[in-house]
Length: 333
Image (tube, rainbow, N blue to C red):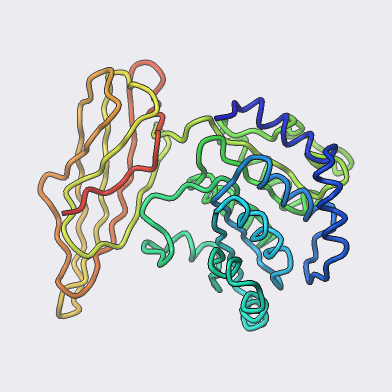
């Protein structure tokens, strides 16, 4: 796995590479409904190729022209793409565009005609296995401050090791301020070239991560983690849940793992039951696998899945940080 600095070096060199020039030429000769420039599309194609990304999230499909460019890159990496756009006016156009693609591109592309907030609230994505980390998330949806800030928070929760978030239209003040404030409260995320260092930034000082591209590019921690900031795991489950299984990237220090479970059960007669359960585990140092069990297993109705949100916090006397090797998973019987 590349180090953080190696990844940043690769990203900064993309626009200087011969492959980038070839991509620009190919894209310029292809009709597209994308609002993104040829340079932007070539960069996104190459960042997927050069960093070997296989799991990409796009917020803001628009008409699907830029989406096809992403799908072409992911096909070469045997990956898949999830793209989100809530526009009712464009839904049929986007679906028609995707249907016009080659079968291999259609099979790896999953379009959700909903808002990004609704997407992240879903607990049983039809196309996703439990526990998903995205290599790359592209935010080009709601350009309001609250919309962009919400997308940043959600994407960071689902980012993999050294996950990348690319934010389009960096020069729009609400978008830039959302990025600035996100970085302020998430010290383990950084703009790749440390361009955002102060709260006191005038419009003339707002710059992109890479010249001539409309992007701010953020990179996350080497390993996602559970710490004193809330980590949430959610899923719709039909069956019995015993607890959560956690695999660590590094041995932990002695500490305490706590969870608050919010459980909503639809009974067979369609009445709703709500439960809140707390559990805690004292963990010895040196562990790389932790199972946090419920006080007693919870079972859904026979007909309807239950919705579970488990909110996790970790505390130790050193770093207050559990570095994860893979996404936590529910233990299901």
